[in-house]
Amino acid sequence: MSQTPDLKSFRRVVVKVGSSLLVDSKAGALKRAWLNSLAADLAALHRRKCDVLVVSSGAIAMGRAVLKLPPGALKLEEAQAAAAVGQIALARSWAESLGAHGITTGQVLLTLGDTEERRRYLNARETIDTLLEWHAVPVINENDTVATSEIRYGDNDRLAARVATMTSADLLVLLSDIDGLYDRPPSEGGGTLVPVVPRITPEIEAMAGASGSELSRGGMVTKIEAGKIATTAGTHMVIGSGRVDHPLKAIAGGGACTWFLTPANPVTARKKWIAGSLEPRGAVVIDAGAVKALRLGRSLLPAGVVRIEGAFSRGDAVIVRGPDGAEVGRGLIAYDAADAERIKGHSSADVMAILGFTGRTEIVHRDDLVLGGE
Image (cartoon, rainbow, N blue to C red; front, side):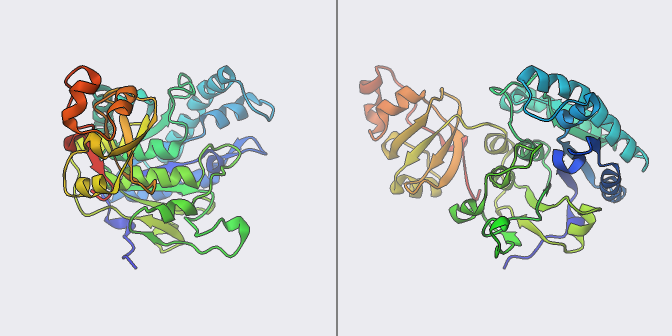
């Protein structure tokens, strides 16, 4: 069994809070007492000179409460309008709760493009770093007022993981409806909590369920995906219950939770961006020989590719999967999907004859590839 980390040992912590933890859907109101208890936990970290960042869901839910909208699904424009109202209420609530401890907050609204495009990614990182230098707590959310289904993260678990990698945080805390990962859905009974996950394997992924709560799009599947993003980039992650007061204090005191550990090897800033801040547009499935070659530090050649999945363009991020379907790594593809389909399984020397132009020898260069465990 791997050793459980100590919450007090981390210097920069991102805490993600879901809608259902912040807003009582039946009463249509903020759970003020719970938020104040979390703010006290965050303040304790802040007093120890720990950099604290919050990724907060709840803008749409808060907007619904303020506007007294009836239950049921909202149209896109209605959800965006509710978010516009809710963002103000949500930011004010965080400012009041943290302000009671003498902490200044700053609101940061992100869209998918802010991590997909390198320049915008760097600009967002600089803004957040400056807030931290000023000892403020950034409260971050997806910009639901402008993000459409085509350009959104879709859940704040992955957004939080991307924020953690963007800011070089060493810990990501996901406060959830349940207290961690179980080896079977808790609703079925008889499940056992997994306290430590040294590495996310296909077996760990199989334990995840897909259901989310009423106000949240994220289930355990998105939390496992967040774990892959975070740990690959060198950030530990812990899933703990947000159904208790002072949830961070509970984790620090040895309460039930699941820790996801990072690999030993450091990751460069560019590879953190590739692994943790880009939405994969497709996948390439490779044979066992190619998997072995990648593990030896080589690039991915067309000869090792057996299947192309998705409609991606040259330069997009793709998932690299082994013959068993397990994720081997992520990288930037050197060919459009159509061209990759034509050259898969062929020698690099055949590319010119097949495509009619001289492309790169590698379908994914080693410098553009991040393997699981790196």
